[in-house]
Length: 210
Image (cartoon, rainbow, N blue to C red; front, side, top):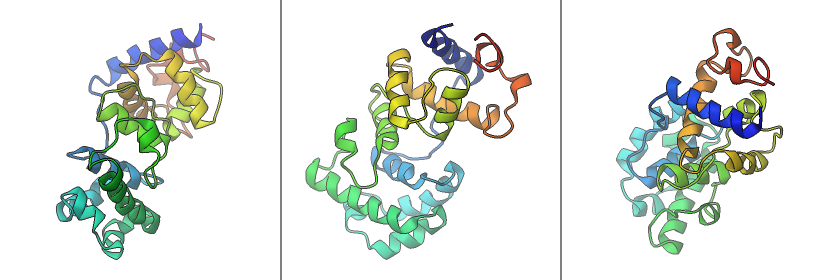
């Protein structure tokens, strides 16, 4: 089976398992999603969703964030870990979007990764979820699962992104990535994957067709 065949099969299998491919992070606008994604670095989405309501309630506009006191943002997001760097990034993102992008969250990866604290993973999420463009979010789940089931044979996130963009239809990328996260949490876990009951069993390089 070719990697493209395996990938297309995986897309269809995950559609059946997870009809609603939704982002686990709660946000009501593009900048809030950008903030939530920044907070999710080395932190669970569940924890982020516990922290962001207070943050989003206090800071409602881009200018609010751009003019925020660093110590205040730090205090609100403290339980997310690495809160000093994250708070600095959040304020810096707001200032750069205000000053350099007319107050609009950029719609392309090249501009997004110029924002403080924003890498390709975050940029791809925004591009796909907010703007509906081609995107592949390479997080720990994607790195593990794409290699484990045989979609790629490389561990570097950028290389995985580029390899998957060759075989994942452009309009399927964002949803596929959300479904991979759900699949990774439910079944294809890091330490004890549930191979015997896995819907991907026959499509997996480890357990099914080689």
